[in-house]
Length: 466
Ligand SMILES: *Cc1c(COP(=O)(O)O)cnc(C)c1O
Image 1 (cartoon, rainbow, N blue to C red):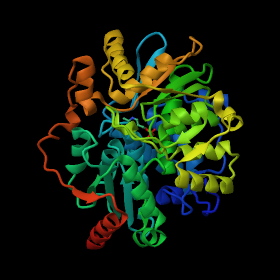
Image 2: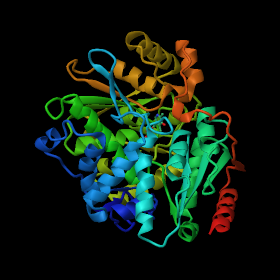
Image 3: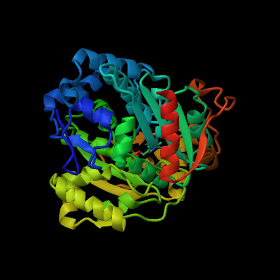
């Protein structure tokens, strides 16, 4: 399998190349040259498989010759062996048609672990075959940072620099990053918001000389391997609810459009996905883009679901690439226009191509809190604010009542316990696996949201460790 850039001019790479590169050199994102397809029989054959074995089946066509099947199996078993639930991503029933897919049983309590635990092992495996040192740079609204740091801490040949918006991640999120004292982990608190952090990371990658010198790589959801790993749980859940014989809908709390793009990929690969509900909070650029074609950057509003407080959704470019018939040149000019004007209009005829699959909903703070209370009252389930936005959107969306609707539960409620307590009156306990978090020493650097300051810090630390 080869991977091409959404902006048409970067060299095509294999799975190993795309995994290690992260962002393409022309500023675009890597996507598979074509979508692999599974027949109904192949999907039916996933019934009863363990999570790790499902991952081997789903990932094999994406990995291609980059790993033997035996190696892939070994990595999947190691990655998912670290989860605290034997089903890895268990389904829970909320009522006769609503389900939760719990994606937060990994080491840092959010769905990012599902992809990053595997990505950490892929990095190590691929780097072992080369004499290269990798510098991972990422921006986080909270959960990617902790999951990436857990996955990469102490690994040889990798340094990780993680930028988070100062004061805008929850205390649990911050401590999960800053209490990891491994020498290859460098936390940076940016004086700005998440979009500032994300823009800085993009600028660093855009500085070709710097990127070459330090062998930069990305662990944000712009990294294709992450999205590939997320496709697995759509198959795993749908097969348990009756696919391929029965279609299933998914409601996805969305920020950077990575998780829901994995659902789109699953549909492209033949999984009968009845609907993908793109659930946003009041930072609703995706809802405006999908419902009205208005992809324009608004004012960022901090909410109780900080991992969705995003205005520029990087992975939306991957969907646009398909919508614009995979025309890289057109995408490059469209994204240049977006960078300059902070706006693009998506014509209705273009949107119509995905109208049957996607729908979107904007959920405000009241609807979010109501969804938390409903899950608690109707099913005894305490859900986190992000999951609540997904569940609220699932309840609002009109669908054939025979279709099961799966809300992706993206974070453990204890990660956002103040918001959960405010809505439900119940204070979720931190699971045993993160006990002691509040007693540990923290380490991070505070820097202004300026390219020079960040590059200077990265260069100094990376050289000191070279
Ligand atoms: C990252 C995150 C999201 C958003 O996922 P995207 O892939 O960025 O759309 C939603 N909920 C939680 C808890 C997250 O950590």
